[in-house]
Image 1 (cartoon, rainbow, N blue to C red):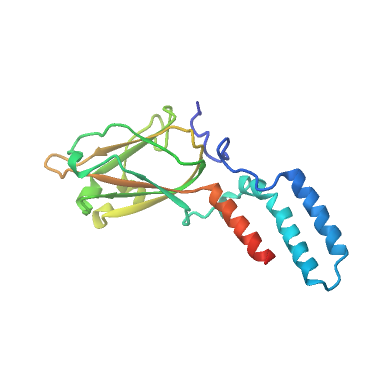
Image 2 (cartoon, helix red, strand yellow; image 1 turned 135 degrees about the vertical axis):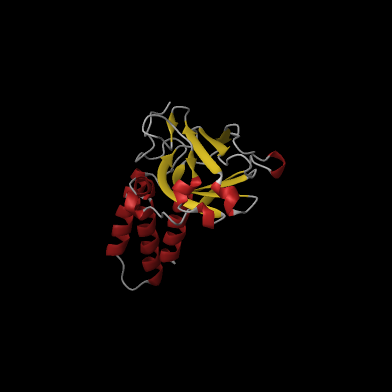
Length: 224
């Protein structure tokens, strides 16, 4: 069970990044690359082999690099994946004053949450203005709080002015593990006579596996 705030600044554990090349193998490859480099004359084949070996040695640091990404360098506006919440449908709109059931999130991998998008199928500013959300983590930690306990937050507080928009995005940053239980709860905060709403909510995140694939592709390109 995670304690409140335990995901802030922590790195993914089990199910997170996997080393592309083991550290020991990486050291051996680096040594071989230096040995080859010392014997290189003008032979194109040897030059290419040296480049490939140096790339493999660099890739052995992939896991460590991913685990040590400075917060300031995390691509806040460039997620690699989106988890869409499909629990809400037009046939089950949330009426004014009504709170939805808990909707568990099924994370496909460990990663870094970099933003949450909000909208409604109705697509009107009035519908979005009525949307309040609460996100509970592991049953004992809330993403939103009033300082004493978890709470619902109107999306207007998260994204600015829903009265002049029908969709919005809240940038944030939070590390999470695939096995962590997140629950999403929505509430229609419209007053009497307000509109019924159908929320559309997406969780934008960076999957470390995508960064590893990018590192491999980059190394292969550089070696070529």
